[in-house]
Amino acid sequence: MSIRLENIAKHYGPRARALSPIDLDIREGELIGLLGPSGSGKTTLLRIMAGLESPDRDPAGRIQFGERDVTRVHVRDRRIGFVFQHYALFRHMSVYDNVAFGLTVLPRRERPSSGEIRTRVHRLLEMVQLEQLATRYPAQLSGGQQQRVSLARALALRPEVLLLDEPFGALDAKVRQELRRWLRHLHDELGFTSVFVTHDQEEALELSDRVAVMSNGRIEQIDTPESLYRAPANRFVFEFLGDVNHLEGEVREGVLTCGEARLAVDLPDGAAELLMRPHELALAPAPSAEAHLPMTVTAVSPVGAEVRVELAADWLAEPWLATVRHADFEHLALARGKRLYALPRRWHSFDDDGARPAGRPRLATAG
Ligand code: ADP
Ligand code: MG
Image (cartoon, rainbow, N blue to C red):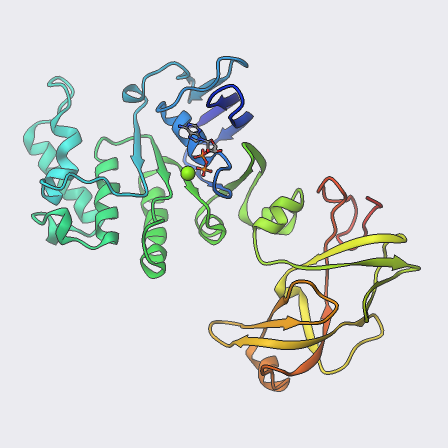
């Protein structure tokens, strides 16, 4: 089921604007992540899609599910499955009964036969790999298992749209990883349309077909994870999607200076701010003709595919982070207190209103 929002705004009271008018087109079968900091309007947008919250009447917005206008349709009649951060399972019911509940309370003419309900619930429990635990009670399950029960319960009514609000937020990192993969699998197998809210960029980028990055009640950009990362529309998106190192200085005749640091740049004279991702920095024992950026290693974390190196310098307000290969880590003998030079491979700059200047990433226009 495709979802189309047109001109959807929301105020909670005259001055509390939670959403500026938003347009959003979600294709049938897509998995969309709503990503943004706390308070950016993600939950409000999700609840409006669900029909748990109504949009402002002025401007008159419109919500469409497929060809159907559901703007004024009650939540009960939108055929939506929900999963929230806190798995609100019925504590006095077994896993089986929790999943079956929605089916057993359907009006008689819509309710499947008891045999059919049994088959469906067992199928769902099989899918979420909880068949062995069907007779247990929620208190006897781990957080991840409880959240899988919530998902099975949400899917029991065969919704065409699944809405999830920080579904893995309360779980530890390893379980989150596992549930993510598993949600993606379920989504692909069952072919519903999903929208899930998260404030975790890694989660959004890993799981979604497209991510809508939100701030201040607006969608800043909606795109595939790859395009968002490679071509952020503005500074907010760039900074929200990963670690960023800042370099502020004065440019004169193609050289940016900041204390004793110098970097050749193709920027016009005046104040400039460059942004760099940790993997866009190389580290070397000596400066180059283009870059003289002396730094001291303050921390090294050799855990994972790459080594994370924290760097400080008198000319920098905030420490920098570089990620380097294990081979470079050994070859450079990186350790706390080691002095070396940063060599940016690439950097980014944005003009004063945060928009990405036109042209190549290194070619900035005056702000
Ligand atoms: P997010 O889910 O991104 O954290 P929300 O949609 O919950 O953001 O909130 C967006 C804004 O609307 C916030 O400023 C929040 O304080 C406000 N808000 C959310 N729900 C209510 C409510 N029921 N009453 C008043 N203000 C609300
Ligand atoms: Mg929220």
